[in-house]
Length: 233
Image 1 (cartoon, rainbow, N blue to C red):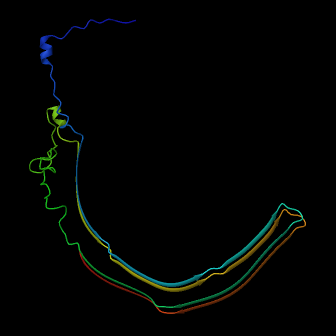
Image 2: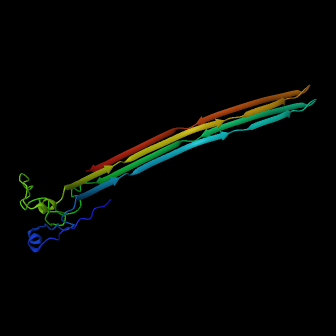
Image 3: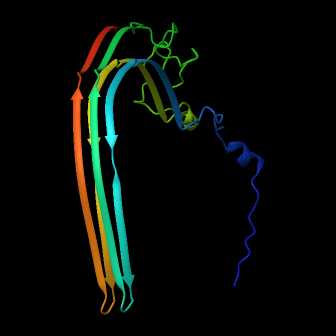
């Protein structure tokens, strides 16, 4: 069951007694005011000098034999590897590595981000007034509540001002020298024979190796690294 009610319209005097408050503009009633000013100046220098000298003899004769019977009956698997190696290695030389590095690095620029001066208190990055601060650079007094409700929306609810100025000078001069004399010989002889799942089968592997290796080094391996760095930071 519904009930119809006849509501009388407001008269001229009643309408005149009503009041309202206009809301501020959208940009004035912003919730977050974030001002970030990052000014970075980085000087990086990494001169690298490296010298390598080497004398080497390498010999690696390899001999291998493999034989297998898999799931076979009455079969014979034989593997024979015979290796005879005579290796004569002689080095008559000097391995010399010299590395001289002279670095002059000037990172004495104390100016950060050019000659632009930082904004004064109470102003933004472009010199305009900050709505969160008074002209004298102080915060407004919030001890009293304004009589106009619309004035509570003036300004910003959160004001964040970040100003970071960093000046970094990085220098890493690196100097190295390596010298080596080496003789390497690796004769390998292998023989493999296998019977897998076989009946009455013979698997024979014979590996014979004769290796005669003569290695001789007549020389001097010397590494010299001279580094001089003049850093001004």
